Image 1 (tube, rainbow, N blue to C red):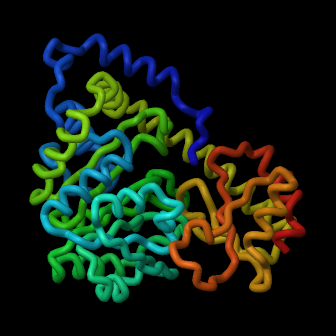
Image 2: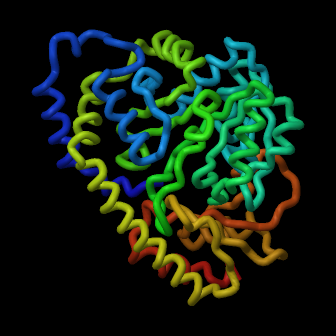
Length: 356
């Protein structure tokens, strides 16, 4: 998760004042359920500039975070006749421990889980699943950190076109990439088949309950209708504040600052593991706020997590993100987004014998 203490309070206060000073009488009504025209225009421009998306503001629907955005898209697809939704495995986890998966089940969708390997989602397994929509994290797979390989990207788009299916792209932390420029969205390859969902939660804070859906043209009206049924629209004043933040360049400035901070924490984590547990391999470090530690084959993932907690160190086993109980190599998900540099090294030192 992001560093909550880093929320740009001064910039948000400035943006809120800008929103209040520019608000018109019409802005105080419910307005367009798709969201403020000002924010949709700015978001579309941002997605074109930063994420290489094919973005028209008329196809943007403002949501109250990722969960609502995904719900709007899935309900629109269910109304259109889609009966089966596929999720990555590992990913959000099973219906028992994932609100996201439970929500899909509650809509009457049959849920299937498709394995992820070192190249990303297994498109052949997806093809055999019978799904009409798949939810993926191609830029930085959650939680493995894998980037969807180019040939898999094209295979996934081919699957959607061939099966008359849709892809929902969870673009959750791609702005925080450390080795090169962020990978462009999958939507750029097939804007008529891919819905992109993004939020301000990772860049700013979860308290900013705003996100967006860039919908395919064939789904945009249905997604907007679901938004109107759901809550008539998100807070207009908050939308205008976010639009001011994006348009002023302050949002980009904040991202640059936080990338440097997270990169520093990432470097400390790599160094601490190299010194205290040199046999542990790290992957998934190209972007985001976490890394994956590969434990020795004989290690008991759950026992390591439990023992670390007794030493006041929070670790997460990969098993909690899996939908199936099949045997898998023991791995840990190590978050560094909300941990100070000073706390990382002693934390790793405290559990080094467990990792080894």
